[in-house]
Amino acid sequence: MKILLTNDDGFEAPGIVQLYESLKDKYEVFFLAPKENMSGKGSAITVWDQPSFQNHGNGIHSLNGTPVDCVKYAINFYCPFTPDLVVSGINPGPNLGTDILLSGTVGAALEGRNLKYPSIALSANSFELNDYSHQVKISEEIIGKVDQLEFNSQCILNVNIPNYSDNNNPKVEFTVPSLEIDENNISEDRKSLEKGNISISALTPILYSHDNNDIARSWTKKLNN
Image 1 (cartoon, rainbow, N blue to C red):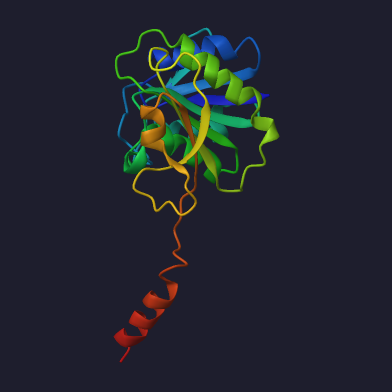
Image 2: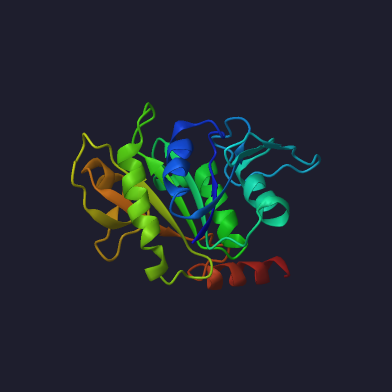
């Protein structure tokens, strides 16, 4: 498997560095992450300037840009292969509910999916971790089985991993983002993580609302009267 690896916390963040050190012995990995911390940048891009690229050795590269810039520029200019998977993370702190709209971790994964590559966003349920070994192990297990998943053409996986102290044998739960309407008794991501479980949500950027289509059509007709 060929993996494009990025994040939003910068190329020196322990989450991405420890994940890279583990993945590079098993897969072909291209590491390109922001030069500075870009948390909360969502799907922002650099518009007027071309971000500068830097090789730090040991297969680690940085870009003076946003997480989405990293995915775009890696695929268009720097990555020496066509990736089978885009992986964003491991992020310190969970990305749950409406927070996903602001997350650079999720934004990078959505950009990978926008460019037609299966993508995963990985986050840990802690803002103060230095040792990501528990999260790396779980991430590896998920990545190793991702080829068994038939991704929707626009869908990404948003994975939130509990601390080892929360549950040393967490189960995996399919979840929906908190505050979404749950019509099928599916667990909310926030509640699942609070129970010490691994939360996996399937996300897609929905730009068209079928539910409100008739209401909007009727309203626009009134504007022409």
